[in-house]
Length: 151
Image (cartoon, rainbow, N blue to C red; front, side, top):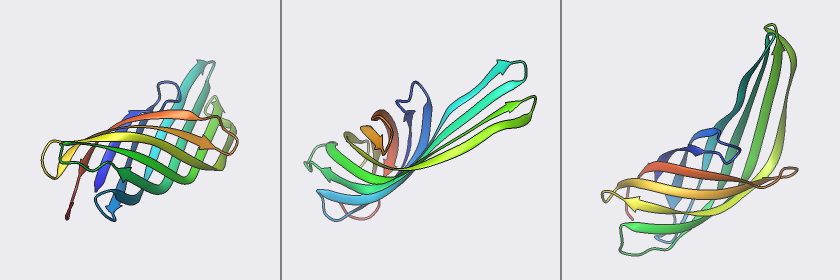
């Protein structure tokens, strides 16, 4: 299963774009990973001062599906990986400050796959992400998926 996700990141109202892949072990369990990018700030403060901040995540984990014969399949998800936050500030076009931080992170949550056809559909997912020194933040996603091979 491969998919594309878009939605608010839960870090305020910042957009999130990402994608992932899941490989089914059986009809109840799948393993895979996803990556995402959230542009958190791109602000101009006047007097030539600008700030830019981005969040990146790369996670690997699994999903437990509540398999049924319905077009709607709920699931639970958990994953571990890393997050990276980058930021920079410029004054008059000259880089004044810049840096980045990497951290181990995990996520947990659940979702619902709504099959439109036998192989394609829309998924809705809500997860919480926790980094080593960060608070838990929420992520709500709406994505499309395509399923290839057997189910």
